[in-house]
Length: 141
Image 1 (cartoon, rainbow, N blue to C red):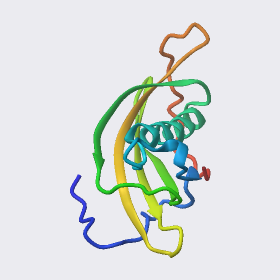
Image 2: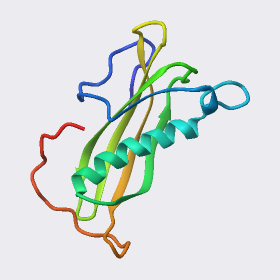
Image 3: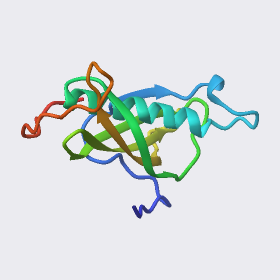
Image 4: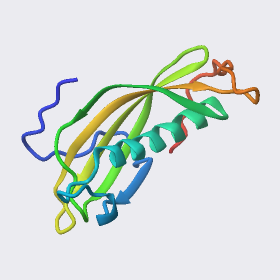
């Protein structure tokens, strides 16, 4: 995915964020930067919510592809995570995720990272289960 991140932009037109949180000091490394792992965990929560809702049940993350960090997240930034379905297979879903930050003292926003998450729907036996082939719904996350 090629994205010009040289200029602040607005988040993608995907509706409301699935997750919105504030980057806190407890989420930093010794240098004071927000851990990439914390950000990835937040992305997994957002994508997992979208996957479970579409699959109508439990889903497990099986891969993360094309994870790209464009800019750092700073303590105090508002972090908004957008996630949407790009493909539904027989037992799996692919969810595109974008993370945007808003500087605490302004309305400036910029994309900080993005990734493609794959989930598999899990049955009560903890094995892959089919996902209903229903037409995509127009629900808001």
